[in-house]
Image (cartoon, rainbow, N blue to C red; front, side, top):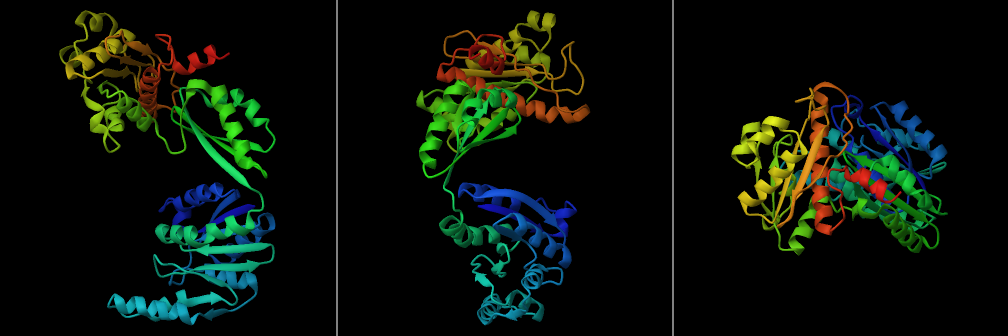
Length: 431
C-alpha cells in the first residue's frame, strides 16, 4: 500500500514547530508494511490543502493528514475535505454532545466557535479522540481514503494507534511485509552498502541506510507471502556479512549493549575523558541500573590533570602532548586502577576548530584497559563535518560512539589490532 502524508500548519512552514508528527507516522506506517512515498507540509490555506490532498491521491492509496481540525478560523482541514468531496459540512450531534459534556466537566462555558469541531463533511466517518476534543475523520475520495487527524501529537498518536493503523493493517495493505533494523558502529555507510550487496540482490528485499554520527542503522524490509521467513534469511545473511560491526537490533542502543555485557560479567567500567568533557560518562549513566556497571569518571581536560589525577607520565606528556596513543593508554589504565574498576575507558583528541600540538582536527585516540591486560588503543578516522565551531559537537559525539564500540568489542572478545581504526580493521579483516 502506498501512503502519502500531508501535515498542515503555518507554524511548521515557518519553523516555529518541528514536524515530529511526520517522523512518527512514517515509522508506524512502515511497521505495518505500508510504503510512505511522500510527505509534504502545507500552510493554513484552503486551496493549498485541497490541492495537496487531490495530488496525493493521484499517486497513493491513502493519505494521512494532520493538523487543521481545531476550533479556530485558520483550522481549515475539515472545510478542505468537504470541498474536495463535493459535500457540505454538517453538525454531528454526538460530537456536539461530547464537546458540551467536556466543557461542563471542566467548569467552563462552551463558546460557539468550539462547535466547529462538531462539524464533519457529510458522509465522513468520525474517528474517536479519547485524548482530546477534535475528532479525527475518515473521508472516501476519488482515488482513495483520507484520514484526517489532529495536529496535537498525543491526540494524533492516540487516534492513529487505536483506529487508523489497525484499519490499514487489516484491510488495505494488500502485501505482507516484515521489517528489522540492524544497528552498526565502526563502519562507513558506503562500506556497509558494498558489503550488503548480496542481501540487496535478494528478491523481495529492500534495504535502507539510516546514518547517525559514527553509527548506521540498516533497515531490512521483506515483502511477499513468506515475508517473515525471507526477513529471517536476509537478517542472518546481513549479520554474517557485517560481522562484529553489528552491535544490536531494533531499539537496542550501544550504551545498553555495553551495560548488558558488563552486567553479564559482573564488571564495572570507569572513564577518563578529555575532549568529550563528560559526554561519555553521561551516555553510560543514561539508563536505569547503570550504577551496577559504571564506577565513575575523571574529566581531565587540562594536560596537567592527566598526570596529577590519572598518572599519565609527565615526560610522555612533555614529549608528545596530550593527544597521543600512549597518553590514551595511560589514561585508561590510570582511571581503571585509581577508581577500582574492572575496565578503564579513555578518550583524548582534537575537537577543533583549530589543530592542537600539530594534530589536525578530528584526531582522536580511544583506549580500553581490561583486568590485568595492556590497554588496547584505536585511532578512529573521524570525518570533519563543516568548519569553525560547528565541528566540535559532531566530533565529540562520534568519539563517544567509537569509545563505547571499542569497549563493546573488547567485552565480546573481538580481535582488535592495536592502534587501528576499528572500522578500517573490519574492512581489512573481511576483505
